[in-house]
Length: 108
Image (tube, rainbow, N blue to C red; front, side):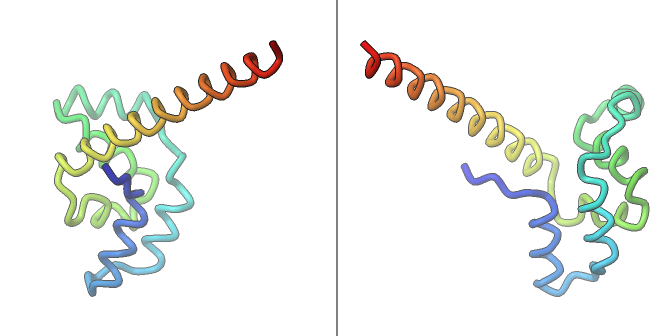
């Protein structure tokens, strides 16, 4: 699976001609790690939809970008992307474990 960062996805949509401004992209970049987990949890309880809860949570800190955060992306796309990130991190962890084993073998 290929992981595509949501901002890269939005930039690609802009290149394809969708009405997305640089201001919206900049606002997303500036707030991509500005996640209020309490708000996200509250949104998820209210919406009963994990992806839309995070879309609205992100939109609250990036209001100019809010209309385009989920533009052209289905919830399935977002969920599949999340699975690919988890899988990539798992594989990285296995790689570090193997490197550690090789280092120990070299020391023996």
